[in-house]
Every structure is written in structure tokens, then in C-alpha cells.
Length: 318
Image 1 (cartoon, one colour):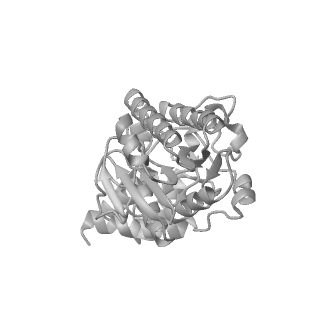
Image 2 (cartoon, rainbow, N blue to C red):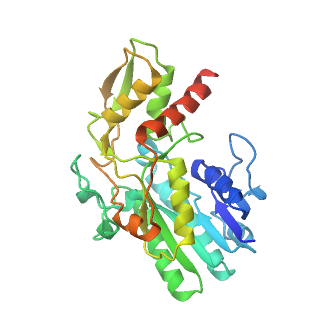
Image 3 (cartoon, rainbow, N blue to C red):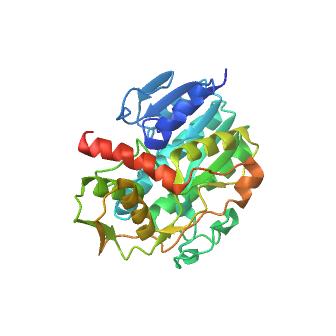
């Protein structure tokens, strides 16, 4: 039986990933700084640990064959745009200590969850931007500290795989959303934030949207994300790979879909000042299709319907 470590196992993606790995018959150890917020972890073994500390990382990787490195200090644009130093510091320590411990203690394959935030800001100034290919990462110019740290972690993967007997790969994630994700408190991303606002609103009220709402993104449903991570780990891929949808929508269009799903007829969008990130970002899935013989299949409408129903239940105690 393959023994797997999932770091960040109490987080949104980690919680779903542990469940998927258990369904495939793996023995799973989950490690996180906190307990899962919505119930016990499905992992065979789960414990709390601060992976910024080297000794904690050594304990976490002992006697495992594969590592899915998801642990990170992160959130939506409102969070990552105001916490550069602390976020960079925490994530650099987590990634370097976990990677070093895995390389020195016999881990066979190591998957880093990187981010679309590593792509250069100069390629994302147009809302109708062309899709970002994996080769677009250099010359490097991420917009914020989160992107720079993830890019640094990708480089560390290359150095460690070149000097240790350990295979590595990196998944560049594009705006993952779905049930059990953060939906309040300041770290939520756009789909969850808008779902929460719509769920709490009454007909005739308005919904705040940061900026003019014409900034664009692609959004990937959690089930597709987890399937992509699993397929990437099982592949022989070593170069970074996009994991995301390639359907580009404006934030206004995203909000309109959520309002329609809610069934509320008289909600309007009110645009206010706030952080927006890059103007446009989309995933080029050409390499994903070639490497994994697969791509995300959940439509935005279906994924948002499941997400809205869960957030509506949470905020309205349904």
C-alpha cells in the first residue's frame, strides 16, 4: 500500500484530496496547523504541526512514499495584497523545510501546489488576455509576494530533484472553488465571497463588487482540481503544469451566474474600490491535455450551483 502525506490536509483542497486518496486505497497521513473545520479528517493519521519548523517536517515525512505539499498561508486577493512579508516568510519556511525533509528521508515523488500567481504581471494587463502557457513564467515578474514565493519554491524543486533521488512536479493552480472552502473572514476568494453576499441579501438589495467587475479569471471546481492533482502525481511529468479551467469570465459575469442560481430577481451589483489583482488571467490547458489526457469538465454553472447551495446553507443555517 502506497503511503502518502498531505500537508495542509485541513484546508479546502487538502480535505477534498485526502478523501479522494482514501477512495483510491492509499494510506494517508494528514498534517496541518489546525483541525479540519467541518468534521474529522478522513486520513488514516492526522495531527497538528507547524511546518515552518524543520523538526515538524521531518516527523511528517517519515515512512511515506509520496508527498502532496499543499500547506500554505494564503487567501483571496484582499488577503495576499496586504500581507506580503508574513506570507512570504511563512510559505518559504514551509516549502523549503518540507522539501528538504522529504529529499533526505526517502520520499519517492513530491508534488508542490504552486499557483497561477507566478505568471508575469506584464502578460496580464488586458482583461481579454491570451491564456497563460507554462513557458510564460519567465522572464519572471509576479505581481505580489505570494507569486514570488511560489516561483522560488518551483526553483527549489528543480535543484532538489537534480541532487537527490526524488521525483518532483508542480501544479500551477488557477482559482479553485467549491464547497468546504473559506467563505468569510477576509481570506475567501471571489466565487465564495460573492456567493456569501448573494445568500445574505434580500431582493431589492445590492451586492458589492471590487473594481469595475470587468477584470477576468478562469475558475476551476474542486473535484476537477483534485482529479488533476491525482493524475499529475501518477504521471511522469516533472515540469510545472497548469491545473485550471480555460473558460474566461469577468467578475460581473461570475456574479450574474450566482445571482441567477440564487433565484433572487432584484439584486444589483454595486462597484466599489478594492484590490483587484491582475486585469486578466486564464489557463492554457494545452500541456495538461497532452500530459494527463484529461482536462476539467465541470461547467462553471454546475460548480457554482453546488458551491452556492453549500454557502447558503452555512450562512442561513438551512
